[in-house]
Amino acid sequence: FRSLPQILCFNTMRYTFNMITMLKEKVNTHFSFPLTLDMSGYMEHTIIGENNGVRNENEIKEHSSFVYDLIGVTVHT
Image 1 (cartoon, rainbow, N blue to C red):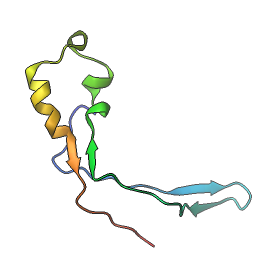
Image 2 (tube, rainbow, N blue to C red; image 1 turned 30 degrees about the horizontal axis):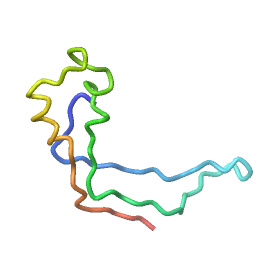
Image 3 (cartoon, rainbow, N blue to C red; image 1 turned 30 degrees about the vertical axis):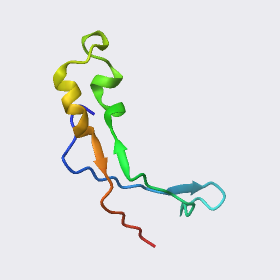
Image 4 (cartoon, helix red, strand yellow; image 1 turned 180 degrees about the horizontal axis):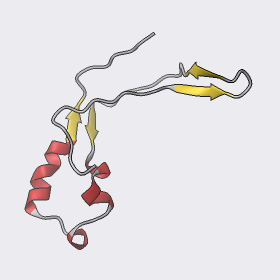
């Protein structure tokens, strides 16, 4: 990612394709959610690198904006 929104939402599509029945089936295994999520490892500058790996002050200050707190989960049954 190059930038992230203030509020980050994920939609997990938990389906698999059954080759025997040739139908899409819902996956019902346990799925846990972390209370905090640090997205800094998925940022473009972390993966590709900038300035030969030297972190500048703005990047260090910006790091806190890559951490999200879980505020809700919707489970459809």
